Amino acid sequence: MEKVTRKYIRLANYDYSSNGLYFITICAKNRIHYFSEITEKPIVGADIIRPIITLTDIGKILDYSINDVKNHYENISVLKYCIMPDHVHLIISIMNDIFPADSGRMISAPTLSTVIGSLKRFVSKQTGIPIWQKSFHDHIIRNEKEFLEICDYIDNNPINWVNDIYNQNYWR
Image (cartoon, one colour):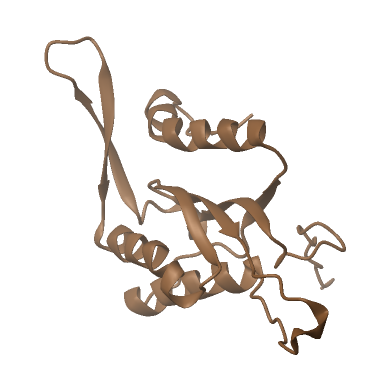
């Protein structure tokens, strides 16, 4: 049997511990709906239907883990996130302190993969089951326009989920 080599999905020669904003999508293994349930609820007196996200027990552990990132990595924060039934979207900010070369301090910044790996391991350990698809999707946010588009995508993801019969979500 021929050995399958995985395609490297990270940007070649890019330092993923660099200061910046990153749009991350992490999927559940086999796209199983581990994390939440999205239901439609009409707003009283209006024709508007608003989706309601109800976190499962695993989704609550994931929510805790996302909010706990700042306690483990002082220069990394999650600016926005949305926990969907079978995936999670996050915008992660890395803002490492910059020290002058003569300060004598070594800088060892965690990479994006380190942070996501820790988050995935914590949730898996707490649940006792392997719930994650291998790897994750990342997009380096290059400017304010992209940041605003991605924020809008994350905010509207539950609505798109309800409206899309195939649950195929596109952020552009």
